[in-house]
Image 1 (cartoon, rainbow, N blue to C red):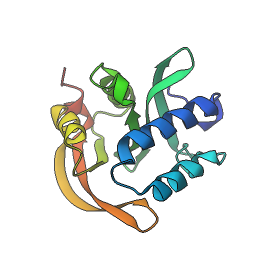
Image 2 (image 1 turned 180 degrees about the vertical axis):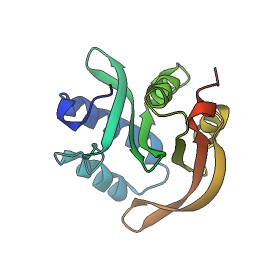
Image 3 (image 1 turned 90 degrees about the vertical axis):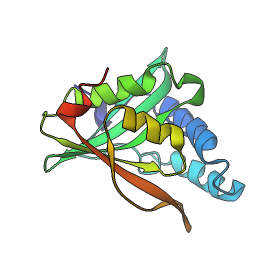
Amino acid sequence: MLPDRQEIHNLSALRQHFTSCFKETYADRLTSEELCGLIAGLNTPDLGGLLPGKDERIVTRGNHGDVSGCAIWALRAGTAYIWGFYVRKAEQRRGVGRSLLMGVLAVLPPQSRVKVQVLKDSPSAVAFYRHFGFEIEGEALHELAPGRHDVALHMVGMASDLRQVT
């Protein structure tokens, strides 16, 4: 079973993880003021709304209390929505992302649809999801910070198919 909000004990490690990942991911997309605002939001008890709510779950990977990757997800009406999927750059291409995704897929019914949003101009993230069998369903503007939008791809796959990739 994946931990739920009540089982998250090390908020400071998660806060540090998101801070690092936001800087790595958004430094070239946002102004320093926008990035600082995004990071400041992590100082709330729910880490700026990222922590799971009632029907949401989080899976993390790391060593010795340090978080190297995490994903937040919810299963609603047969569709699993994944967000907050961040792996620190230093840990990318080391199996952390695969482990997170497989951790989510392992607990989903095989007939579940799985949906993620990926920034269109993040070719490595798009390639990661394509590798596992996700297909682009569409695109829409995604708000990165108040008033700052970027194009996000809606990618989908069936849990049973996505689990088959090795």
